[in-house]
Image 1: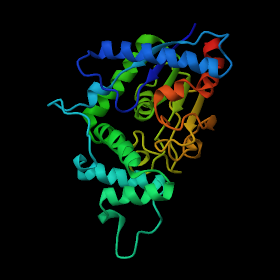
Image 2: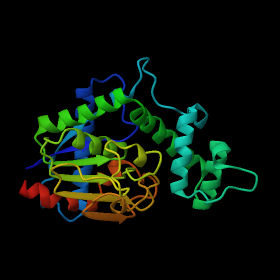
Image 3: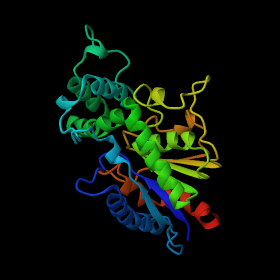
Image 4: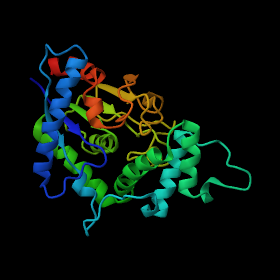
Length: 284
């Protein structure tokens, strides 16, 4: 049975646990969901690969231990600007209302506007913004946190000996950069799920390495197959076709959940993820 490394996304900090304990707890939960994914994909005759969790959430905490933001009003000006850049991809109109500018529009007003266009509640869209942007900004705006998060992921991959990595949400950004920064890790298969790698401004334009001269992201060294999976309603996995900006080999999209459309649990429990993993786990 092969071993894979799974890299978490936002909102996975485990207060009171050591990084090792947190990784063990996450891996145990994810193993159950991946087994369900193998069943969902008609692959329950195969044993799902064993999961090693790459846990880096503790590296994004500041020295005072402050962590998650609970309200839009608690976002810093820079974080609110990142939210506006994300909203442009989610569905903000091309032109603001007469007499307004996107830069000067309060973030709550922008969220209300986009929510109406998408046919969802502003509360839901606001919760996504509050869950996503503080940790994304904490990672991208701090060279030290960025380095430590990448090193945690690289260390886990190296110690596990895994050739296959599944990376979710912000974890796909950390993994992408870690694989570039540590080209000798031996990873051959990358499966990104719910990935915001292509979000312009807030993520894509801040990547390390930067997009190439043609405006595209580059393939991490050693990767021979890269699969991307997006839940059709996932408002974080935007632009949804990651292959338009990165050298992705296969892209898969489907409705998986009407409620938990961005959670790693949902992605692991999908037959799409199992089908993307199984051919490589059987042969590596």
